[in-house]
Image (cartoon, rainbow, N blue to C red; front, side, top):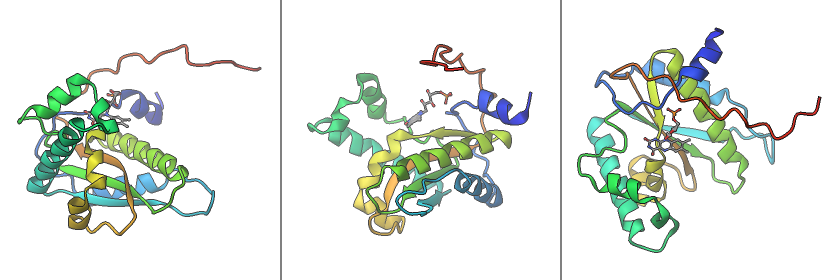
Length: 197
Ligand SMILES: Cc1cc2nc3c(=O)[nH]c(=O)nc-3n(C[C@H](O)[C@H](O)[C@H](O)COP(=O)(O)O)c2cc1C
Protein backbone atom coordinates (compact mmCIF):
# COMPACT_ATOMS: atom_id res chain seq x y z
CA UNK A 1 0.00 0.00 0.00
CA UNK A 2 1.09 3.60 -0.58
CA UNK A 3 2.88 4.63 2.64
CA UNK A 4 0.74 7.74 3.15
CA UNK A 5 -2.41 5.63 3.22
CA UNK A 6 -0.64 3.04 5.38
CA UNK A 7 0.24 5.67 8.00
CA UNK A 8 -3.27 7.10 7.93
CA UNK A 9 -4.92 3.70 8.30
CA UNK A 10 -2.56 2.34 10.95
CA UNK A 11 -2.17 5.42 13.17
CA UNK A 12 -3.61 4.86 16.65
CA UNK A 13 -3.62 6.93 19.78
CA UNK A 14 -0.76 5.68 21.93
CA UNK A 15 -1.18 5.66 25.71
CA UNK A 16 1.99 3.90 26.90
CA UNK A 17 5.44 5.31 26.11
CA UNK A 18 9.05 4.37 26.56
CA UNK A 19 10.98 7.05 28.48
CA UNK A 20 13.37 7.49 25.52
CA UNK A 21 13.82 11.04 24.28
CA UNK A 22 12.54 12.05 20.86
CA UNK A 23 15.47 13.97 19.33
CA UNK A 24 14.96 17.72 18.93
CA UNK A 25 15.48 17.66 15.17
CA UNK A 26 12.65 15.15 14.83
CA UNK A 27 10.38 17.25 17.04
CA UNK A 28 11.16 20.25 14.85
CA UNK A 29 10.35 18.21 11.74
CA UNK A 30 6.98 17.21 13.21
CA UNK A 31 6.19 20.86 13.85
CA UNK A 32 7.29 21.73 10.34
CA UNK A 33 4.93 19.06 9.00
CA UNK A 34 2.17 20.75 11.01
CA UNK A 35 2.89 24.11 9.43
CA UNK A 36 2.53 22.60 5.97
CA UNK A 37 -1.16 21.90 6.60
CA UNK A 38 -3.65 24.14 4.83
CA UNK A 39 -4.68 27.36 6.53
CA UNK A 40 -7.58 29.62 5.84
CA UNK A 41 -7.01 32.62 3.56
CA UNK A 42 -9.80 34.47 5.38
CA UNK A 43 -9.89 37.03 6.81
CA UNK A 44 -6.14 37.41 6.40
CA UNK A 45 -3.42 35.09 5.24
CA UNK A 46 -2.06 34.64 8.74
CA UNK A 47 -0.44 31.35 9.55
CA UNK A 48 -1.96 31.26 13.03
CA UNK A 49 -0.21 28.27 14.63
CA UNK A 50 2.34 28.68 17.40
CA UNK A 51 3.92 25.91 19.45
CA UNK A 52 5.28 25.28 22.92
CA UNK A 53 7.46 22.18 23.26
CA UNK A 54 7.91 20.65 26.70
CA UNK A 55 10.33 17.78 27.24
CA UNK A 56 10.86 18.31 30.93
CA UNK A 57 9.47 15.30 32.84
CA UNK A 58 8.78 17.20 36.03
CA UNK A 59 6.94 19.96 34.19
CA UNK A 60 4.82 17.58 32.09
CA UNK A 61 3.79 15.69 35.24
CA UNK A 62 3.03 18.92 37.05
CA UNK A 63 0.89 20.17 34.15
CA UNK A 64 -0.99 16.86 34.19
CA UNK A 65 -1.80 17.32 37.88
CA UNK A 66 -2.80 20.93 37.28
CA UNK A 67 -5.12 20.04 34.38
CA UNK A 68 -6.75 17.29 36.45
CA UNK A 69 -7.38 19.72 39.28
CA UNK A 70 -8.83 22.30 36.88
CA UNK A 71 -11.23 19.70 35.47
CA UNK A 72 -12.26 18.50 38.89
CA UNK A 73 -12.75 22.03 40.23
CA UNK A 74 -14.83 22.89 37.15
CA UNK A 75 -16.75 19.64 37.54
CA UNK A 76 -18.05 20.78 40.90
CA UNK A 77 -19.25 24.06 39.38
CA UNK A 78 -22.04 24.54 36.85
CA UNK A 79 -19.70 25.23 33.91
CA UNK A 80 -19.68 23.22 30.67
CA UNK A 81 -16.86 21.01 31.93
CA UNK A 82 -19.19 19.62 34.55
CA UNK A 83 -20.81 17.73 31.68
CA UNK A 84 -17.77 15.41 31.37
CA UNK A 85 -19.00 11.82 31.42
CA UNK A 86 -18.80 10.03 34.75
CA UNK A 87 -16.13 7.54 33.56
CA UNK A 88 -13.82 10.43 32.56
CA UNK A 89 -14.36 12.18 35.88
CA UNK A 90 -13.54 8.89 37.60
CA UNK A 91 -10.25 8.63 35.67
CA UNK A 92 -9.34 12.21 36.58
CA UNK A 93 -9.81 11.39 40.26
CA UNK A 94 -7.26 8.55 40.17
CA UNK A 95 -3.96 9.82 41.62
CA UNK A 96 -1.93 7.55 39.33
CA UNK A 97 -3.64 8.79 36.16
CA UNK A 98 -1.32 11.01 34.13
CA UNK A 99 -3.29 12.74 31.39
CA UNK A 100 -0.12 12.83 29.26
CA UNK A 101 0.58 9.13 29.80
CA UNK A 102 4.18 9.84 30.81
CA UNK A 103 5.02 10.72 27.19
CA UNK A 104 8.47 12.31 26.82
CA UNK A 105 7.23 15.16 24.61
CA UNK A 106 4.26 17.46 25.06
CA UNK A 107 3.48 19.99 22.35
CA UNK A 108 0.88 22.66 22.97
CA UNK A 109 -0.41 24.33 19.83
CA UNK A 110 -1.75 27.85 20.17
CA UNK A 111 -3.67 30.05 17.76
CA UNK A 112 -2.95 33.70 17.21
CA UNK A 113 -5.28 36.09 19.02
CA UNK A 114 -8.41 36.39 16.94
CA UNK A 115 -12.03 35.47 17.04
CA UNK A 116 -12.13 33.54 13.80
CA UNK A 117 -13.05 29.89 13.98
CA UNK A 118 -10.85 29.35 10.92
CA UNK A 119 -7.88 29.34 13.29
CA UNK A 120 -9.37 26.32 15.03
CA UNK A 121 -9.65 24.49 11.71
CA UNK A 122 -6.10 25.50 10.81
CA UNK A 123 -4.77 24.08 14.07
CA UNK A 124 -6.74 20.85 13.74
CA UNK A 125 -5.36 20.35 10.23
CA UNK A 126 -1.83 20.99 11.50
CA UNK A 127 -2.32 18.51 14.33
CA UNK A 128 -3.37 15.71 12.01
CA UNK A 129 -0.34 16.32 9.80
CA UNK A 130 1.86 15.97 12.89
CA UNK A 131 0.18 12.74 14.03
CA UNK A 132 0.55 11.12 10.63
CA UNK A 133 4.12 12.34 10.22
CA UNK A 134 4.97 10.90 13.64
CA UNK A 135 3.46 7.53 12.72
CA UNK A 136 5.64 7.47 9.58
CA UNK A 137 8.73 7.74 11.82
CA UNK A 138 7.64 5.03 14.27
CA UNK A 139 6.67 7.65 16.85
CA UNK A 140 3.44 7.27 18.79
CA UNK A 141 1.15 10.16 19.56
CA UNK A 142 -2.13 11.16 21.13
CA UNK A 143 -4.29 14.27 21.06
CA UNK A 144 -4.98 15.19 24.69
CA UNK A 145 -8.19 17.16 25.07
CA UNK A 146 -7.81 16.69 28.82
CA UNK A 147 -5.02 19.28 28.61
CA UNK A 148 -7.32 22.07 27.41
CA UNK A 149 -8.01 23.76 30.78
CA UNK A 150 -4.31 24.68 30.87
CA UNK A 151 -5.06 27.19 28.12
CA UNK A 152 -7.17 29.30 30.44
CA UNK A 153 -4.82 29.02 33.38
CA UNK A 154 -2.81 32.23 33.75
CA UNK A 155 -0.02 30.56 35.76
CA UNK A 156 0.56 28.05 32.98
CA UNK A 157 0.49 30.66 30.22
CA UNK A 158 2.96 32.84 32.13
CA UNK A 159 5.25 29.91 32.92
CA UNK A 160 5.33 28.96 29.23
CA UNK A 161 5.86 32.55 28.02
CA UNK A 162 2.73 32.46 25.88
CA UNK A 163 2.07 35.98 24.58
CA UNK A 164 -1.13 37.75 25.55
CA UNK A 165 -4.25 36.61 23.73
CA UNK A 166 -2.93 33.37 22.23
CA UNK A 167 -5.41 30.51 22.63
CA UNK A 168 -4.55 26.89 23.35
CA UNK A 169 -6.06 24.80 20.55
CA UNK A 170 -4.41 21.38 20.62
CA UNK A 171 -2.32 19.54 23.21
CA UNK A 172 -0.40 16.65 21.61
CA UNK A 173 1.96 14.05 23.09
CA UNK A 174 4.67 12.13 21.28
CA UNK A 175 7.08 9.34 22.13
CA UNK A 176 8.16 5.84 21.26
CA UNK A 177 5.36 3.34 21.92
CA UNK A 178 5.85 0.55 24.46
CA UNK A 179 4.19 -1.90 22.08
CA UNK A 180 2.84 -2.08 18.56
CA UNK A 181 -0.62 -0.61 18.26
CA UNK A 182 -3.54 -2.85 17.51
CA UNK A 183 -5.16 -2.57 14.12
CA UNK A 184 -7.76 0.20 14.29
CA UNK A 185 -11.38 -0.84 14.59
CA UNK A 186 -13.15 -0.43 11.27
CA UNK A 187 -14.61 3.01 10.79
CA UNK A 188 -18.26 3.45 9.84
CA UNK A 189 -18.56 2.69 6.15
CA UNK A 190 -21.94 4.32 5.63
CA UNK A 191 -20.76 7.93 5.81
CA UNK A 192 -21.72 9.35 2.43
CA UNK A 193 -25.02 11.22 2.46
CA UNK A 194 -25.30 11.41 -1.28
CA UNK A 195 -23.09 10.80 -4.28
CA UNK A 196 -24.02 12.77 -7.37
CA UNK A 197 -22.31 11.17 -10.37
C1 LIG B 1 -10.25 16.55 20.11
C2 LIG B 1 -9.69 15.24 20.65
C3 LIG B 1 -9.44 15.12 22.01
C4 LIG B 1 -8.91 13.93 22.52
N1 LIG B 1 -8.61 13.87 23.86
C5 LIG B 1 -8.06 12.74 24.36
C6 LIG B 1 -7.65 12.69 25.73
O1 LIG B 1 -7.75 13.66 26.48
N2 LIG B 1 -7.12 11.54 26.18
C7 LIG B 1 -6.95 10.43 25.38
O2 LIG B 1 -6.46 9.41 25.86
N3 LIG B 1 -7.31 10.45 24.07
C8 LIG B 1 -7.85 11.58 23.54
N4 LIG B 1 -8.16 11.66 22.20
C9 LIG B 1 -7.92 10.50 21.33
C10 LIG B 1 -9.23 9.77 20.97
O3 LIG B 1 -9.70 9.09 22.10
C11 LIG B 1 -8.92 8.79 19.81
O4 LIG B 1 -8.40 9.52 18.71
C12 LIG B 1 -10.17 8.04 19.36
O5 LIG B 1 -10.63 7.20 20.39
C13 LIG B 1 -9.89 7.16 18.11
O6 LIG B 1 -8.83 6.26 18.39
P1 LIG B 1 -7.49 6.26 17.52
O7 LIG B 1 -6.86 7.64 17.62
O8 LIG B 1 -6.62 5.19 18.15
O9 LIG B 1 -7.85 5.94 16.11
C14 LIG B 1 -8.67 12.83 21.66
C15 LIG B 1 -8.92 12.97 20.28
C16 LIG B 1 -9.40 14.16 19.79
C17 LIG B 1 -9.60 14.32 18.28
